[in-house]
Length: 102
Image 1 (spheres, one colour):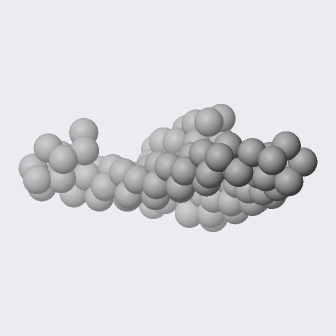
Image 2 (tube, rainbow, N blue to C red):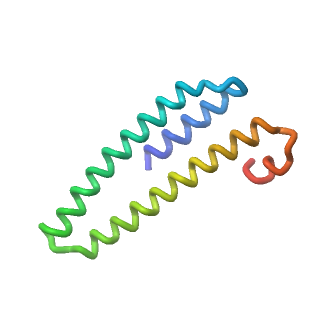
């Protein structure tokens, strides 16, 4: 959960650098977030393996799979929302953009 909050706050800060966006700084943030998610994924895989083999609970392992899919969807939606917010900010005259995201 915390990693997504850091991502959202970082994007809000990035939007404040418009119209000449500080993309390098934001790119670094995205890189850090990606690294954090990779670390989390590795830990989750280890937990899944333990549940499956050591505790003989493949049912719990499946629940973790579902959670991971939901987290991935949440991250993708977050990225889409961020793009929409930037478009709305870059096109204040376009009421369509404003209604959709602000």
